[in-house]
Structures are given as structure tokens and as C-alpha cells.
Length: 190
Ligand SMILES: [Zn+2]
Figure 1 (cartoon, rainbow, N blue to C red):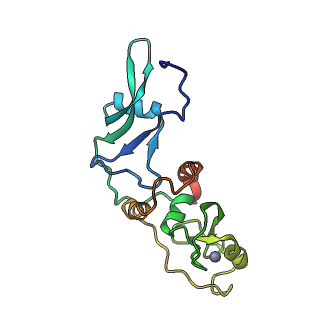
Figure 2 (figure 1 turned 180 degrees about the horizontal axis):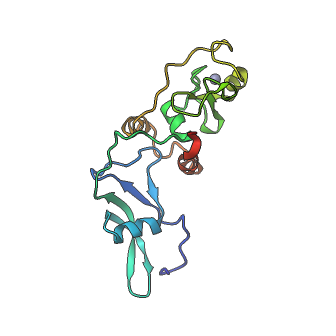
Figure 3 (figure 1 turned 90 degrees about the vertical axis):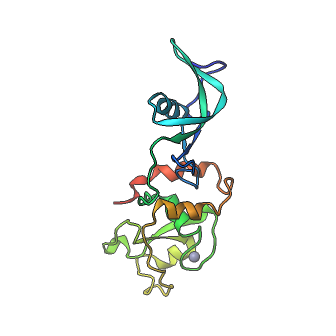
């Protein structure tokens, strides 16, 4: 398929920009695998802006792999942000909402304000970032019952709001393994 060696799915990801050339998602920056990016170029959905020095070959043609693509149609950033574990931590600034301490992402957990055991749902309005200590202390109680401060009313952010928060963090703020977590639990909302 390729010039030198077989490309793995994770090789040569393309950075995805909106039609205004701003990142579709700022933190972690949205990326597509090379196959998805190439398909989007061939379908005319995106404009390639920069290329890798590698090509993918098919029997009839060879194509240089895009490193940056921009959507042709603008996607509104006022859309509600998808509820993922990562987006939740990002909304709360990677801090425990109870003690206010900033935590390494690996140390953060998410907490249901109204415990699930008491009918609390997994939604933006009922989930907050919490450190393990505070989460353990709270258990199946409300913050008031556990003697913890009541967090400001949590709300569902727009993608634009999350992007503003995300720009505070340099691209290498997160370990690369966290980039995947931004996508894997989109089903958190139940
Ligand atoms: Zn805490």
C-alpha cells in the first residue's frame, strides 16, 4: 500500500481544522487517522493544507498523506460538547471541585453530585471532577451530607467554551495516551 512500509492505523494522523482554520477541538487537538483523512480528501469534504512525506498507493493512483486538513463546511462551535470523561475534567480545569486541588489527570475521578444509588444520572449537570480522597469521603452521599462544599451549579458547555479552556493548556500538557480517552467514553451520558 505504501512507499516504504505498511502504514499502521495510528501512523500519520491528520490535524483537523474547522472551515475557519481553527481547531475543531482544541484540547486535545482533533486528529483523524490517515485512512479517514484520505477518504475525506477524496470525497471532497476537506481541503488538505499540509502533507507528510509519505504516500499511499492503490493500483491506480498514489496519494500523499495529508498532515493538516480543513473542513469545507463550518461546524458550529456553539454545539453542545460531547460528554466524555476528558471533557468533564477539562470543564472543571483538572481540579477537584471539592478541595480545589489541581490533580494529574490520572488521579482525577468523576463524581455524581446526586449519587447514582439515589437516582442521580450521568449528565453534565450531575457530574463533576473530584480527587480520589474527596470522592471516597463523599461516597453515596450528597456534598452537604458529606460536609463538602457545594460546587457551583455544573452545566453543559458548548464546544467553543471548552476550546477556550483547552487553549490554556499547551499541546504537550497531556500524556499522549490521554488523547484517546477524549473519545473512548462518549457513551458516559446515560
Ligand atoms: Zn478533592
